[in-house]
Image 1: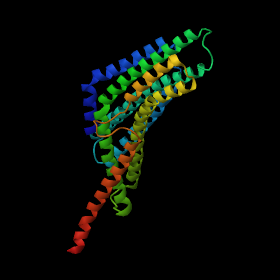
Image 2: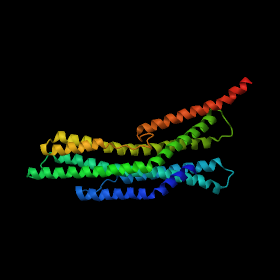
Image 3: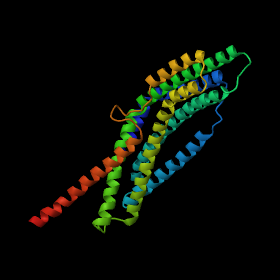
Image 4: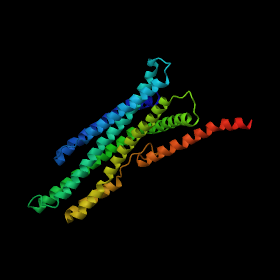
Length: 305
């Protein structure tokens, strides 16, 4: 129960930080509705949660069948710790993914508001140009303040989940290498004691582990990509609808966002982006080749003697 125990310990120890993170998201929603006069009409988060729930149940089911199939001689209650451990680890991974998706939805709403503000710039909001400039300036100010709030939230998110994400990546590499090594021994060494059904379950577990990590990485990368696109939208708005009085505000806000580049790292070891998947695949291949080489060494020694 290594992964589940460590992740649960981390969650239990820093429960106040998790509650503070959720409280910050609620406060952001209140401020968004209050200052920008909009509500969240996007149901994408519910679809995302449904898909993640499906993957969660599929992953836990496959791991449970795998645990019972490999230990037919053991009593079923002795296998419960393995099943509970898999449930805990999968729950932690998907909960991190859901938190990242929640933050991304809020960044997307801010960016969507900027795009709509640009479309509204084609038409005068009121007959008085001074009122129009004041209204646009105030909206830009609120967007900037809300963006800064999300920047603080994503920084706290990175601090809270850095250790669990490092554990998830490390354990996923170890389990995937073990699964591939089992399949290799069954296919190329033709060991009769190894079950083909068991090998298929190992293959399913490889796919589920990769999908679990890919969804987590995509969610974290999507947050950073959405957050870092805000200054680009500000510059685009500035170029399309140039105004001397608004121009200085846009320059100031865009410079602030460029200096506050959003990224999620794992204790400084690596940034969680698409390159993480390449690192994962490369590590699995490297360690698998090492195991295969060690497996062939005894055979060579026997031929020499």
